[in-house]
Image (cartoon, rainbow over all chains, first blue to last red):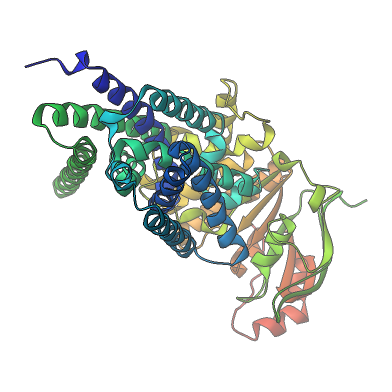
Length: 281
Length: 250
């Protein structure tokens, strides 16, 4: 059996995969607990339009998509605020428009279907060194911002009204969180593809919430689960010749199921123990 | 001489579209007051509290909090707030008692608002004041409604504020826990001279624990001491024999 680490493409895939999945999972904890997880899914649809625009203009799709995704994230917040729409409606409108833009541009150009296919389903094994460094740079930025604003994000997630009466500028913070979500979606796009990018935000966070007993633990567990699923997914896909994006997401889902069942059986055992203690007394 | 005025509500009105919620409400709250803000459902109590805290803008009138107009108010560490949904915590939210009380410290910190080792003593002190020192590392969702309330009070008083605002803090909590909770608030008001503004429907709280009462029904129709409240014909008319008001203190 050959060593996958000897190949440069696997080294790049691991570096980009781990570097991207960890900040996605950490930000995912805040989004899932705020019931904002679908913003990742909505922005993923928008990135389709961004990628198509980048390919049409022959400008680095990652950068064009970044701009489109950030603008859309802020647009969703504005729609909620100004039009008085619920979050899911605002996300639905913006994501559909992004998707529509993508379809129109693809139809206009009619030539970059192969490139677009890579973005839709992810192609982390084909990631080039520049993209790795850009991804790592952006991921570090997301991680550093999250650490700097950790306490504010935590307060905002738990109790936004009390956060305001503590002098925290809630609207600015919500905008910052939306921008970070937009950046992570763009980063994850190359690893697992547009269609599955929201899984990087949602699944490790949801899995971590099954077992975490504190907020810090939730963030650490989410990062470990995301990193583990990415490494495991890439290794499995290498040896079994499976598509890496699907394998990473399937492994994340498996970990979630495992932790969910673990929590359920633990709770059942505790209930039985307390019933036994009650009967004894 | 009376106590220093901490909160001034001046001619405040508020409405949603055509619906009037508050109309020309004016009153003061002085230092060391334990004031109950009461009135029927939909009388505008929570709206008024949200206006006082700067969470809503009044259509007319002004609010002065600790001598400063609310728009310019920056001393958030001098106020504590326990919102209405305090006992409605998502049981799966992964936060410990310690982490929640620590949130209260953010109002006194500037960016980046990292906690320091010295903050731990403040958290311990606040938990001790509400009798929750032994549960610091417990997950909030594992606590009873009464214990959760105490955690939120600890978060609100961790900065040793001048005023504590509470919006119906005992909704959905059993009678015994409610009694213990209001005794704890009375103790904080008497011993530490903490000014407390409490929204409540519960007349037994008004008759046993508070020293000032403000009754609201869009307009302020009563504002005075606990004794004045008990003997007020306006209040008797409001109750219309539905409640038997027993105004005595132990």
